[in-house]
Every structure is written in C-alpha cells, then in structure tokens.
Image (tube, rainbow, N blue to C red; front, side, top):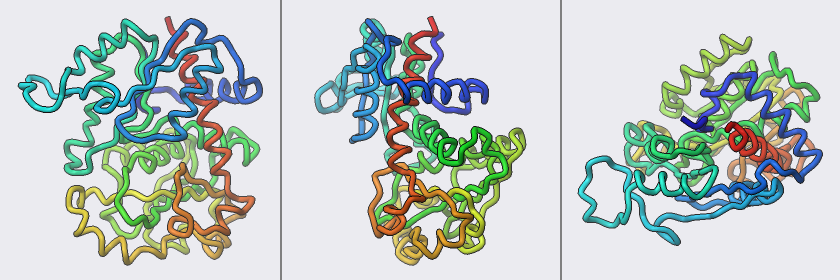
Amino acid sequence: MPRHFLTTQDWSRAELDDLLEQAARFKQSKQGKALEGKAIALLFFNPSMRTRTSFELGAHQLGGKAIVLAPGKDAWPIEFDVGTVMDGDTEEHIAEVARVLSRYVDLIAVRAFPKFQDWSVDREDRVIHAFARYATVPVINMETITHPCQELAHILALQEHLGTKDLRGRKYVLTWTYHPKPLNTAVANSSLLIATRFGMDVTLLCPNPDYLLDPRYMEHGRDNAAQNGGSLKVSHDIEDAYRDADVVYAKSWGALPFFGRWEQEKPVREASKHFIVDEAKMGLTNNGLFSHCLPLRRNVKATDAVMDSPACIAIDEAENRLHVQKAIMATLAGQG
C-alpha cells in the first residue's frame, strides 16, 4: 500500500524533521527533477488561492505536471457513500474515481472541507479517507478537518524567525478570534497538533468551553506534549494567555456543539469581538511573533498595526507552503 500524507500524526518526528530540512533546501534552490515525468491530480472541492498556486507551481518547479480538477464543476460530481443507490446528482463513485486517477497520475491531492451540519459525521473525514482507501498512489491532504501542509509551513517559519530548530520551552498561544461566520476547525486542530509535537508550551485561548477542539485533537495534543517535553493548557483569560508568549497564532473556528445551529452560536460570537489580536495584547508578549494561515480579515481577526508589524510572519509562512509541499511531493513520489 502507498504511504499517504493525511495527518502529521501518522508521521514520526524524525520524518517530519526530514521534510522540514528538505523544504529548507528547496527554499534555497527552487528548481529540481524530483517529479520529472510524473503527475499529480489536485482535486478541489472548495475554493483555493495559496494551496492551488503553491501545489501547481511546486509540481512545475520539480519537473512534474499538475492536473487541477473541481468535482461538480469541471469534473463529474462524486459519490462517497458505500451501498448507495446513485439516482441523485452524483455521476460516479469514488471507487472508480480514485482507481482511474491512480492509473493516470503518481500522486493525488484533495481539498474538501466539512459540511458544517453534523460534526459526528464531519469528524470522520470521509472524502480524504475514501481517496486513501481506493487509490493505489499516495494521497495528500490539502485541507479537510486538518491542514498538515500548513502545519509544516508554520513550523518552518517559526524555526527561521526564532533561529533554532528546537522549539521546546517556547510559549505558544493558539487564540480563537472573531469572524462573522463560523469557520472550519482544521487549522486550529493542526496548529495544536504541530505545536505540541515540537514540544512547545501551548495555551489554547477561547471564549468558553464550547470552543474547545474535538477531544481527539485535544488528546493528541496532550500526548504530543508529554512525549516531546511541552505542555498544553486551556485558558479563557486573554491577558494571562498572552503574557510572556513567544508565539501568537490566530484563527477563528466554529464551536462544535453548535454545528448546524449557527444562529444559536451567533450571540456568543458577537460578544467575543474583543478577542481580536491588537497592539495591546501583543504588548503583553515576550516580543512575540504573530502569524495566521491566511486569508485574514483585517481589523476583524487582527488589526492593521499587528499585520504590518515586524512581528507578523504570516507572509513567510505562506511562502513556506510552496517549499514544504515540494518536500512532501518529492518524498511520496520517490517512495517506490
């Protein structure tokens, strides 16, 4: 069976370090031949700017070919349920799609957000796991309910700006921020996973316990911290969380108990606009770095002053998407 890149939890710390080292080399020398004569299918079930650009360009720079598909738009709608009678809108089943694409390309990458109606269903991550089940080539997660590519880009940026590969002992604040609509928990899940994996002292800051992440990721975070010399705690106290932080990572996400009932969550959101990242909060940190996965609504999630400050490394993190994804593609394509 092929090796997939669905979550960093499936990869050892040594393997993640190898990917980061390879990404750093690609950052120094963009061109390569690791994908010469090879192709990757990029399936986008949701919109994309950075992900599509960085994967498509990365494949090109390594000598490969990227085929971009949007099922339901420029490709047939796909059915993922097993045993279903396909008399609705879907035209073909994932069992055929994944196997046929595997005959054409050497890698398959998938971006598929949850439906935001029932977390008990969304947490199964059915789309990416169905591709992994039926494909006979490696499958890469371009963001579903986790975002492992963003994780590596984030850690590489932190290592660059903190001047060390050893991030243990650094205080890391993952803060919820206001957004006018509930968003995917993927980046929050992933930042919790990777920060604890690299031994940082992580504080998850959110308005109340409803905004805690899925127990699966909270448990992974606690285990990661124990294994890698870090810690994980939850806080609803903004000043205490920010105080002496080395890194502040901002993201908005929907409260899981309110999935499918957004109007009931809205009053909590509206009362929590003060979670915005601003100069006063960053002033409490230990000259901390600030980042965000982008896109970011200015003066909603973070102020102009924060985004335009030297502390903001969001652009560097976004650039690193290109380099870490090239490392992932090169590693997976070369495993045979």
